[in-house]
Image 1 (cartoon, helix red, strand yellow):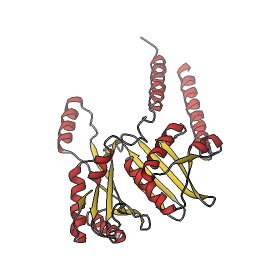
Image 2: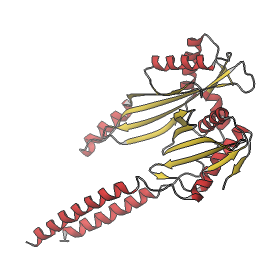
Image 3: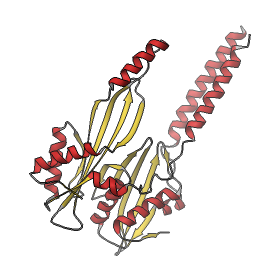
Image 4: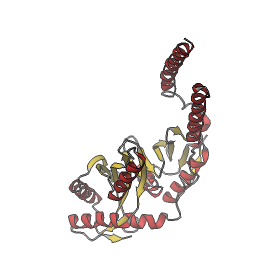
Length: 141
Length: 181
């Protein structure tokens, strides 16, 4: 009898876990994205208006860092790439005009299943991009 | 004799500990830093062609990749980008022999590498030093999965001979010499 009760408890616990899992699966679909601080270290402004040159430099920088380009869209100004090195990083870089004289470059990346929220990797990416461009990246507010 | 529930509880603790350890693998510090071999990598992965027509080179590259059985996943002529992939066999005879031996000794089948997805990304740019020349650069990656469907390797391919083989084919297709950068 005692064993039956235990078995029942286990089944109930397992069902509860399944229900809990179903809820957590939806949790992150629309999560993140609102932190102003996060956006600021993912973004830099450059003193150029040549969007094509900027996109080509982003592609070259991603290749230098070992990425393969998954998508490239000139109209939208978006480049997505994946790096495989025993781990997987997927990064999207979007280029858009900022005023009359500048371009804004925003990068965001995932390491495996987690978004990268540490400023340092983005800083490293922009240093590499600066080298490819021979231009200085300005922090934006 | 110990209560079997104690064993199950211990197993659960172990599972949780494993999951926590797995979650602890963090982004390597050098993931977004230019590697010290960056220049050599670029030389292995790039060739200069004596033509300003980078669109023609990209088209020829697409033809070479199709000859090799790749399917085009992404292309953008304005940005000079072409990405293609193919799924091929990843079975290694040496690994298979070891797996058979291990299977006989342990009585349980050992998973072996089964198939791989190879992705090639070709980027064409007009040379910065000489606008009459174009520079082609390819980067190659692969993901290998085993007979149980698990990823065993996810890596960049950096053997120079593989890059050389591609550029030889591109050179033949365009009747242009592929010069090292």
